[in-house]
Length: 198
Image (cartoon, rainbow, N blue to C red; front, top):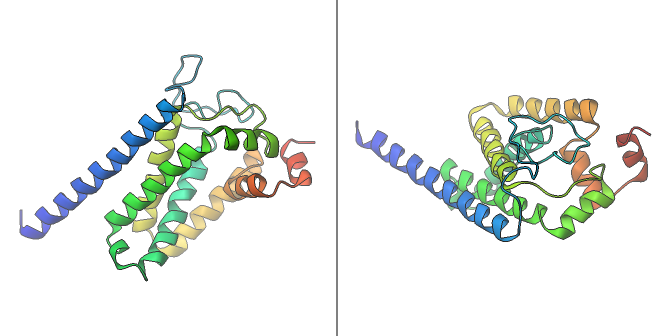
């Protein structure tokens, strides 16, 4: 193995270890906040399909998993733009650590009483009680998956994937990342009625 390959392997290992450390800290913070490790009924599912369910955001994946993949594409694009003016963000491994840290911070904020109540009041997530730690960790992983896809795909392909995911979710569950962000920050009654199927 030549010097370049050794350096790349070392960098990849360091990036992986830092990302795992961020996830470990996130697990500790969520546990200290009283979040359950798995769904409170004691089950663990690879996929949970019911949107209006107390088990939503409790298992490894659900419809909102796709919004976290979109997070990955968005974080890649935004951090790439930022790296044009912040030189230390140029290496993709550094950008990945930054993205994982952002997603981990969101998972913590998302599970505060304020945001949980905001979801319940302003969006269609009427029975939302926060995420299980398993779901939060999986969400970080799916964001990283989206980020790494964006790092390897042409820009037009990344944009197309984001559009397909957003439109597909809007059609299938009447929600997506864009609607979620809109309803959290500026709730619109007409959209909430449409989302509720009224």
